Image (cartoon, rainbow, N blue to C red; front, side):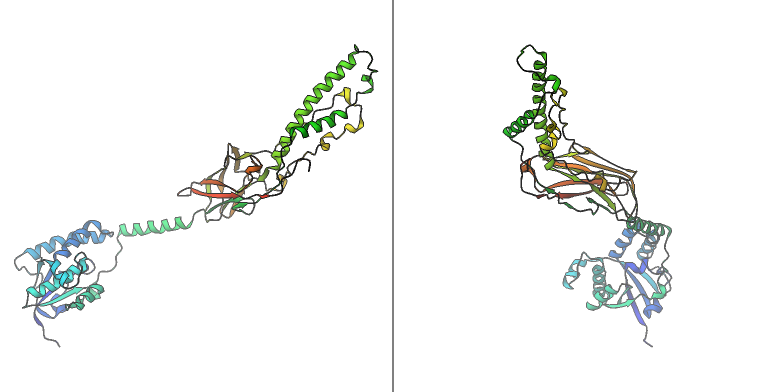
Length: 426
């Protein structure tokens, strides 16, 4: 059996006070095999305890630091008052920066300052055995590497990990937050059924008709007109009111048909620059999204419409001029083109989904979008401003929902496949 040391000065660590039984209850002479023990409390330890009494996350440890500081002050500032038989306490202050510098320690690091306190105490107390007592493995290793005797605080004196009410509440809140974060909607926005990020329509623009082409078609239409039998005359009587009426009707029909041809040419050009589109929102998360609002902004070289463009109505041939069988089907003669209506192929919009067009924006609003479900907008039409505008462009989207912590923003693309520009007669 090792002989007991006459006097041991035990340099204490902050965790000796917070993690283990109260210092008044630990059998120090037995633990250190000493006749007399002085518990040395470095100023760094007092500073850390003072900080713990207000900043430690555990209410138990805050309360423990508040309880221990007055006891430490009482025993360390007394004149040799014993904690136990032959066990006293002293407060240790010294210039630790020079000690840290000489021993390659960091003066701003509390653990290194406590080790420096043990080194300085050894220099000051040649009559004593200096021992660093700590449950901190890192501190013991640092002390040993600088020639300081160390001892681990026995586990039998460690306090049970009693979770106080505040700590229990904090952990419960953290668990609930984790659950909430795990259960959230995950929203995706795209074109059509497959949520494509790029819309690739086929566009074959037609050149606007020249005025000469319109006049040629008008001339062809007028040549086909014939007065009905009741309005035919020999043409020898200038006062015949039927001649005047036919002339007036023919003049008005010519004007109306010219306007029709101009409108039809414009319609055909616009239709050749128009594509159908549908937006879709999908929730692939683990929670429903409510009050979902999506705004998609289009560049100004595009125009957006909810409904399919209606072709101009061909003027009816006046009854006075319906004398020629070839007049039927004049509309077909001039090659009217219509945008294919694919709306019957699109899935119906859900009852709680609204979508509409305003200015250069398409807006969707969904009352509730369940997880693993998607919802389409109504089909709408996108028209390029001119043949020169047909090309790649980007649209910006902005989506919010009650369950989303912040808006989702992004970009979708339109990259048309452009066919050879044709004339309207092609």
